[in-house]
Length: 239
Image (tube, one colour):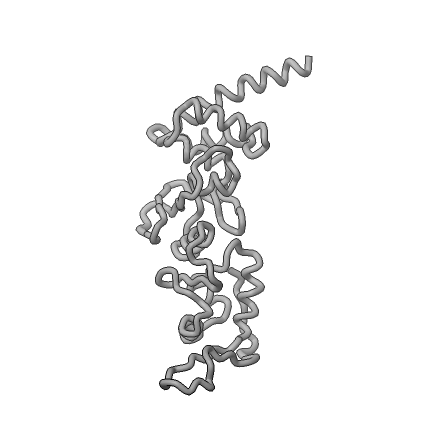
């Protein structure tokens, strides 16, 4: 998140949760104050796919732990897991869960979750998968957290405001879990629709497709079966 220098901590107006005129049993009324940090959060969330923020991100926006606690007590925020908060009312959505995992770990959306974000046709929907660098032990409730030794910026893009493996890397990542015929048909659709660039896919397989990596042989075979016919078709059109 952007790093802000807090110039003022002026509070704009109080907000009371509950009815202060209630004449029944005495209850504790939680009062939260709208702060400059709330305005910055609102602006920052415009670039995000869902209203989820981590404690680290909240502190960077100008919140203190006490301010976070008050928002939780007032019901403005809901804690999803320790250190991750939903600032509206959608903590159970697919995108909100991925956003929370990416913010907390940190991680990148990958495999079938990335395929869904990239609009791969016919791939399983609703899966929650992220990847973290190798030798980091992380977990997030309901999310399949995987490790990678080659999680470099060269193969990471941004989709819906989330760091996500690019389409070519995503295709290589999911190749292990599908049959050869399915992969070949899928790749042809991805190339024709412009989601995957053939040259970049070839480079990705050469750079990341090492011996023993699951899915490398299937991805390479699919590329060979699809790209050679496409080249022959193009050459015939040019003649």
